[in-house]
Image (cartoon, rainbow, N blue to C red; front, top):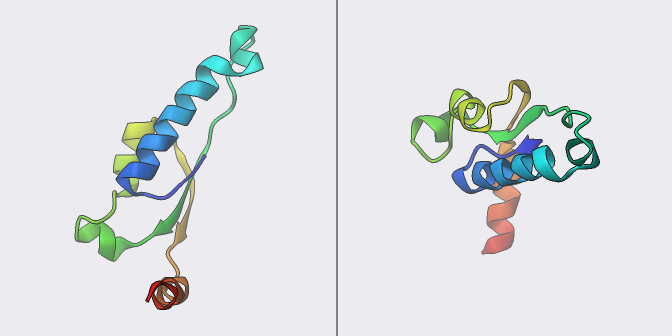
Length: 86
């Protein structure tokens, strides 16, 4: 599961994990579960400190998955997005 550590993204991911656990062929055939992993993207410690974004531990706790990696937010991409929106 690839997730941005923002509330809406984590909430949507939680729903998808529920569907994976109950609606996949593996789950419906009672043969086990889909193996789940968590990758956090666009992670910014500054935004976590200011309360704009959830921390790694918060996301782990909510989704119940161990984090296999964290991709930091790119300031270059953020600047480009801001310029495009103006």
